[in-house]
Each structure stands twice: as structure tokens, then as C-alpha cells.
Image (cartoon, one colour):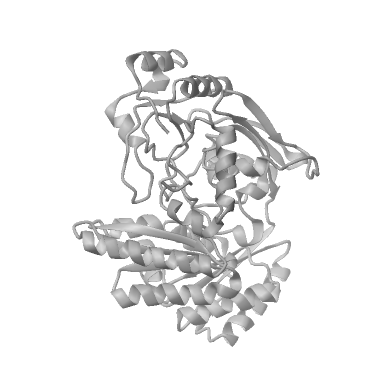
Length: 462
């Protein structure tokens, strides 16, 4: 695609579409919108706009499409695959000021909101209702970003991903047309599910300007346990057994000993520095949860568990999971001289042990600094690998190790990305994973965005 750079006339026209304080070409602002939390190179946009209405978004897109100007949506910049980096420059639409909760309908278990609402802020607002929005990626992500990326996180094993909660969307297309997708009904068999095309499309088909999300009842009781194992393989086998048992944990996280050591040091925890499962259950009564914990203890012990600490209180559970969510930042902070490549693959549960073993073999063979962290309950594995910034050969090795592991995940019937999206980092694997169906994805892209102005350079290789 050939795009136009922003001329003085373009800048003046865009500036006229919004209030003066919602348009900027300032260098510091451009730098803040040049990269996300990934290791991908920064790329400055030419201007940033903060829209506040669907009409403003539609007008901006219509103008940009007519003048062949690339547009990239921006939520919180917390993504990990370069998803919002404006690689073709152009215009960034920052949705942080389009952040109203429009309606909470408790009896329908639904909320209407704008894309800039942060999901933690939503759940705080919902506290008095006894309802919550379950997907939990950890970072302070916006709901628009979560919808664009189909975000998930630690609770996915029980509650599912963002896609499972999106009932209705209002989307601005490249042409400037506003379309409504989905329904507020709890089920529907009417027509094609266009809404599922847009959830996870990373802003390449259209830009979400409003959403209706399904909510669920807040669990009456929590219970959690920490189980320590002599090896990663033993912990991985336990994941399979826990899943097969039908206990339905709300969270089932596997962390390598290097992660536990870091969490102990940073958050003053007192956990054994060994492969560890964090297990959480939600339920209506403490009695039911106690039965589940006892069954989990038996399964863990049968797989060689060396220490099982059940019945963690809410405060201790929150402390541990706060540390779990903060691991990414801890790793970065403790390796300032390194770039961190964050792998994200998912495989069938039956292939989980083999995939985890392959990861361990690769990093140990090459002596690479690494951290293994996994949403084990649904076969979603992360491997954070460090490469020195001043050593191009080591960084090249890190990338080659990652490539071999991603291809293995696909060969095992899995995916190149379980929850971080395609963005820039996973584009090259799309032909391997999707084969001839990738051409049909390209046709869909061309149908909705014929001039290719929406988040260009993402998802498709080349």
C-alpha cells in the first residue's frame, strides 16, 4: 500500500475536527505513542488525536481513507507484540479520553461502555452490584484494546477470554460508516457472526467505538493453594490430572523456580524456589471449596508434590497473584542490560508437557537467561528470554530459539499466539498456521478496508 504523509493541510483539517487540546504533534507525545511494552522497535506517528465521540472517529477515518493516511488505534500501549506501533506512521487515535461507562444493567448482567475504559476501573465501579468482568490480562489495559486483542489471562481456564463476553459492538469502518454488530440478547442464531471477525482483529478491520459486555456474578468464596514440585515435568503432569479430574480451577498457573526466586526477592514472599503451581477455586461455600482443595491435594501428592499449602486467605492470595501479574515488569527491571523476548504460544493440553520440555531443553542448551510462566490450565505458555542489548549475536540466537519453539507449538496442533495477538512479532507464522485460509483473511481485510489504512503492517506477513 502507498500512503501519504501528513501535509500541513492534512494537519490543519484533522486539528479542526477536535478541540485544540485533543490534537498534538509534540515530540514527547509522539514518542509516547511510538511503541508498546514489547521489544519491537519504536516508530513515531506523525500526529495524535484524542477522540471523544463515535462521530469524531467516523469523520477522522473518512478523511484519512480519502487521503490515504494510515490510522492506528491506541488504548493503553500495554500490548506485547507491537500491535499498536504505527509502523507506517500517519495518525494515532488515542482512546483514553473516550472512557465513559454508559450504562450498567444489573438485571441483564450487562454493561455498555466506550473503548477507553480500563478494565480494573470497570470492575471497581461494578463492586456494589455483585457483578464483574472476568478476563484479567494483568496490565491496566483498556476494554477497547482487550477487544481488539481478544485478551485473556489467569482466569481464562474457568471464565474464558474477552471474546466470550462481547455481546454487541459499534464499529467505525475505514469509510467512516458506523455499524452495529451483535445483540443484547443472551443467545442468537441470526446470520453470520460478524462480531467475532472484529474481536481479535487488532484494529485492522474497523475501530470499536462502543461495546456491550456480558458480566457474571462475583464468586461468593475464594480458596487457593500453592503446590511445589521437584521438576517442571512433574508440575506439568499435574496440570493434566487436575484438568481431567473435573475440579474446574479458576486459575491454574505454572511458574518455573527462577520466577519464584524473583517474586520472593521483589515481593518478600516465602515460597520454595522450585517449579510451582498456583491453584485457585471459586465457589458458593467454603465447604465446597474445602472439598475441592482436598481433592487437589491428593492429585498433587500423587504426582510427587513436595509441599502443598492449601486454604490461602484472600489477602495472601491477592499478594501472590499481584506478584504473578507483576512478573513481566520485575523481569525487565532486573535485567536492564537485556532485551526481553516474550514468547506466547498455546497447545492442546495433551501436548503441554512436550511443549514445556522443548522450551526447557532449548534455553538450557544455549545457557540463556529465561523465565517460564504459564496459564497452564489452557495450555498457554510464556517463555521470557533475555538477550544482551550490546550483543547482536545473542539476540539473534534468542530469536532463533523462539522461532523453533513457535513452529513446534504449531506442529503440535497449537497456535503461534495464545493471547498476545499477532501484531508484528507473529506475522511470519501466519502462513504456517493458517495455510490457504490466510488468503481468505486477506480478502476480509480488503473488503472492510480496501485502502489498507487501518493499522497497516499488522497480522499479515510482508
